[in-house]
Length: 459
Ligand code: IFM
Image (cartoon, rainbow, N blue to C red):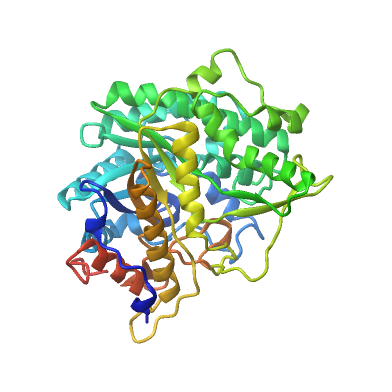
């Protein structure tokens, strides 16, 4: 059980009125229904079928079966007392190969959005959370410049359909992961390992964001648009000039490579210098397009990194140092609520977006179901301490306007398959039974949510 005596006292009323409280998910991680209603394969369907790419050999073919169970899942979100829900649209449900849009796919998100509105949940869609149609990958995916026009076309169709009910739009989830896990270390689909491809992909992801912003504004009255970035506080392993320089370069690719162009500063010169011939091809007008003014920045915060100089290692000659004796989640990620505060201050001070939302934050632990309960005290403690850090940051004047816990449900954790559980709700993947964990109950108590269980039979 959670030891409440050790938790900072915290109440929803300590946060500003109108603060957005939500949970977050993504299409491939929860929907399942791989072949239903005209959905075509995504790069994750292809990638997860390759032996050795996903730790437990699994895929998102069924996942949480959310495609069929969404009413119950939205009931859980409402029962928590949240007022918003962040989800993503599956591009392969809307377009496969550039032919006409798939009406049944659009209908699904139409129903989903209406379901949120009926439950008092503000819909926060993300347009790209890594499930690129395989047909587009076959034409070069994010490495080929044409993708930016395909993305704009897809965004146009989706926002025309949903824009009458959905003002807030997140273009991309974690461009770093799309580019670097997808094309540099190959840990994610499409599994490429090539620095130049990764950097070219990152440029096209950013450009597609920039081209999508005016499309969304044209289709959605009062649109509020932003991207969700995975950012990390970076510290040098020592005060040596070598470690400090390596940490600076690493920060360059992790953080500034995305923040700087989005805020009109272009790509960081130190990274361009380090990557040399692998630098992306940038055409006239690209940087201006990427810097299209946005309404908020989304921060996905998980962990800080400590960096040492490592001559010859990767394009940045830097490596992550594993420090002993620090608190870590089951994933091995350092638990550091202060790192979130640090990043929020940095985004505010160095880039000054109109608003910042924590679009993801959460932890994975090896949960056990005991007598129908999940006593995930560590996850509760993680959540409470991060919310305390968030409140402190707000008190210091940083314009944070919302927080989305990752995740509403245990789900398909990419290359880790179903071996990593991040949910506030436990999912038994054999029976699809949902159980609200103690962490979910804590969030519900904090938010003043009412319903202990979903009204829906399957939850
Ligand atoms: O599950 C992922 C999510 O898809 C993107 N952000 C990090 C989460 C945990 O790894």
